[in-house]
Length: 64
Image (cartoon, rainbow, N blue to C red):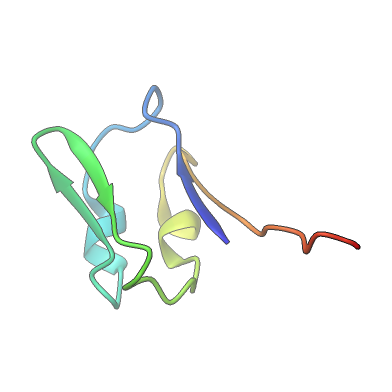
């Protein structure tokens, strides 16, 4: 999975930070910092973002 954030849309409101159960999302110095090694891929941040700036994208398996 891939965490994707549209920085042009993001208001840096911190709603995603507050709901993340694994502390994988932070806002630091007007930047969104994401730690994929902490993420549980629960998609709570995506669902709560008031302007839908966050998208969790599932990578498709490469076919051989």
